[in-house]
Length: 253
Image 1 (cartoon, rainbow, N blue to C red):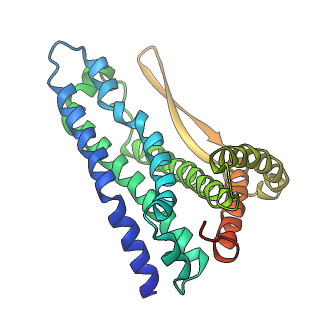
Image 2: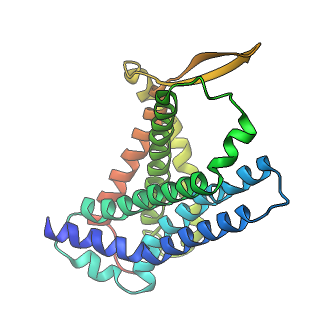
């Protein structure tokens, strides 16, 4: 357990500068937008959430960096020689990216509400006034769950592709790209086989509203989780394969 926590701490420390830059630039941008007095309220709200559009690209970059820096800094040999299991290495590189996602999301949303919260009633008026607090909480939790599934799937897939590409002696960049393409085919095939087994999983329910002659009608949209979980479990399988490759097949080259 101590070795696992040490590895996790190492990865979190390695992310602190990148996370600090992203969070800092996010807040600077939001303050800049908030001071644009000539912009209309809808434009301010849209631009206030603008940093979220860069979040996926940043997560992809730090996911690649978590492994590539091990080779560029010549620390991969030390990491491979440590008496730790492969799953300890791969999960300690997965969890920090998930934590970074949650931190960046929390900071962006908090900054948005703090700087632009007063403008929301100006744009939407009393549309949301009749809706209970549970409406916001339930939909918010559902979106976070989907976000965590999507981000974890993306990170695991990237880690699988990078670890597998290290088996190639040359042209590792093109090999990595081909592995990602082949992975999508594998995921679609395996996910299609798993999906019928998961029909028992309850769907996520989202509440939407419709305004009709001043009255707010709330209706529900149910998102089936069985295909989502089938794809996610397929990627978990590739991630476990990457763990095995790291522990038994990867050599420093």
